[in-house]
Image 1 (tube, rainbow, N blue to C red):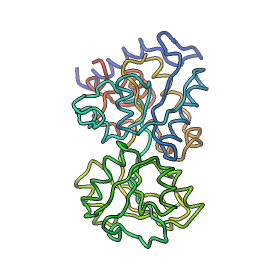
Image 2: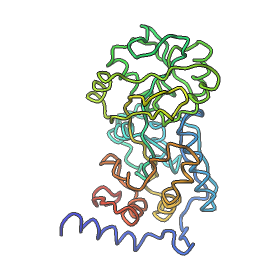
Image 3: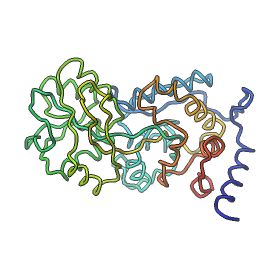
Image 4: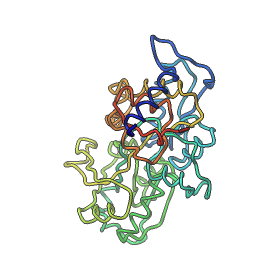
Length: 331
């Protein structure tokens, strides 16, 4: 039996034994009474996006649930792994580090009980400064600049300082929630904010309303250097993302995935995925980044996270996903 046929056989068995949404009836055996989605700080895309789909799922499935403010992907991996949060959101870099046991929150702990649930969107890495600063490029960031990298342990805080060092920038590192950092930039307490969150970033959109900002892109040479050194992909931030942009901005990105505790009932995870992935228009109304929350992007997980069986069943049945059996949790 070849791999694809073996995978199909395994998934067909799962579909036969995994109750999902059918004729309005769900097997809710062993479902938790409530759920939490681990997001990130207020003012960032994770909080807006995560709270949005949490509320959507709660409404559609008749459950009690919502988003929770956290430190971002690294902490989310830990919370979902331990079961302190049923669901969460992570980028692929922190997900890989967490599984390998190099998550700074719990060094040495291999967080293998967080499973892939559905693709969300790409996280662009972008830089913002006040126009009054005169900073229009990475090379113009002065030595010793105070740079806000987001919450400690977030994707931005994990990777952007390394990227800045790779590009020869000398800086003073600052952490905090995105809304707070936006306020500090406006008040002159920061020189630059280095964002790694889905766009449009609420904090940047707010700044645009209140003052003049420069959204700084990478040069071709800077982009190439980062692509070679880090697990990121080439991306352009569309000009219509912000009123400040007059043309697409050169960037790099990491994919984000929603995650579930691997021990959650298959029927629950299958139903959650169905709610989120079956109505993209509604998801986009929650946040524009959800334009990439599409079934065909299931493969952006690669082999980083094991698939939750309930999620794998949905993507095989509805998106023609070819998920090898050994990439599904429990096999």
